[in-house]
Amino acid sequence: MRIVFIGPPGAGKGTQAARLSRKLGIPHLSTGELLREAVDANTEIGARAAQYMAAGQLVPDGLAQQILLHRITQSNCGDGFLLDGFPRTRSQAESLDAHLDARDEPLELAVEIQASDAEVIARLSKRGRQDDRQDVIKKRLQVYAEQTRPLVEYYGQRKILRAVDGVGDPDEVHAKIAAIVQQAQSKRCQ
Ligand code: AMP
Image 1: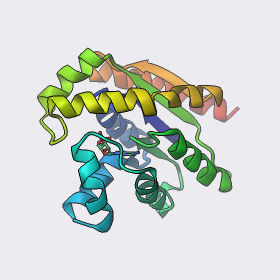
Image 2 (image 1 turned 30 degrees about the vertical axis):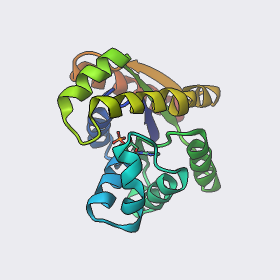
Image 3 (image 1 turned 180 degrees about the vertical axis):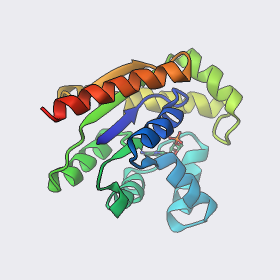
Image 4 (image 1 turned 120 degrees about the horizontal axis):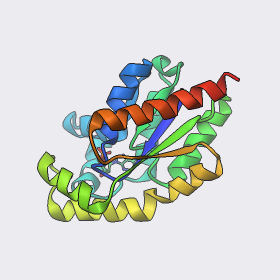
């Protein structure tokens, strides 16, 4: 299945995506992880991305697209994939659609994981990643509201959007997501 997760930083996308990808046997692709690896390896993309990431801003669309679209053309993505943290802008969503439409393999499901600002601020403050400082967290939430949240409507119009409450026990959140996926899979086989 070809799935994207949308949600604010700290909503639990990474944790839930890792679990679901194991369950479905499809790769979990996180652009944040791919970019952090590129920064650590000091590649050209990493060197260009680092300053944006440290400031809580999005890296330019071209960089995010380059790192992600390259990865999904690799062979173990044939049975689908789960994208976590991409797309984050309308332009990224459109480039992903164009890429997948060209192969006649459109996205099948967009899962929005919902969590309030207060909840995600509390969670991220405990996590301690380099970009989890208070001022950077605020910036990331603002960027989410302005640039990424509009994708909920974008996928809503395509009739592939399902929302899930990300607050609460991770096992329960996982069960809700698994049920959504199962429903989408059964529709697909009809
Ligand atoms: P994440 O691990 O998903 O929270 O991403 C960490 C940081 O990587 C973000 O704050 C952005 O700076 C950058 N990033 C990750 N994915 C994208 C994307 N799709 N577009 C632009 N920047 C991204």
